[in-house]
Length: 255
Image 1: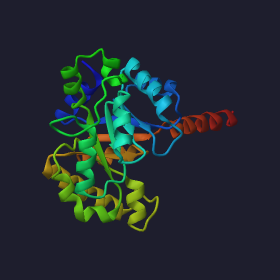
Image 2 (image 1 turned 90 degrees about the vertical axis):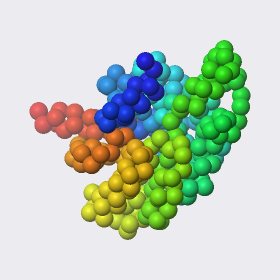
Image 3 (image 1 turned 180 degrees about the vertical axis):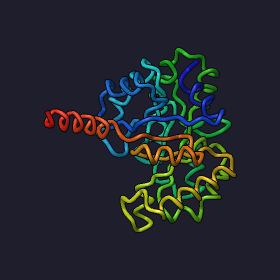
């Protein structure tokens, strides 16, 4: 079973999936995340040095080691979405979604006819450089995930319209940007932020859409898992490495 199908099957049973953001641009970190047992990794093109040339190698590392590669695009443009999928991303995570119209445009850019109008080229990595039969490739390509990030208080008033758009696989809540829009920047455990995320999650549940969130403490992971959030992004590769190094140095200096 491929990683995308395994990911979808796990979500369909109500179980959570876990994965880190990856900013280093080194496929070794992707492989480490896979060997550690994470379900997915988010290859970050919005806040990190990753470009399309080395993105393909990060995706290769994910495929070789058995972890689902999700690409956070640098914006919601057709080019950003299409190129990530052409390189073999199992899904795209698109930031700063502000309206239903923008959501529809992203889905159209991510899907081939009849579900969208993604630019057609069979001579890309995702199509085996034309080795995959045309109809089979288009069918497989339309199984890729579309994950939309909502990140500000102002979008909450338009949330039901966004959730009504057909084709959203996961709605991802950006707690840091949300905290800033609520006037408590960086305070992701503030009651106002927790209440806002809880409200978004409940509205998404009623619409039949899986929700996701970023967290970097076990307490937050447990809180949101128990609240029914299934797509849980656990911290960032460089932060995980920094914390591990800090812990080692602290122990060494304590000898």
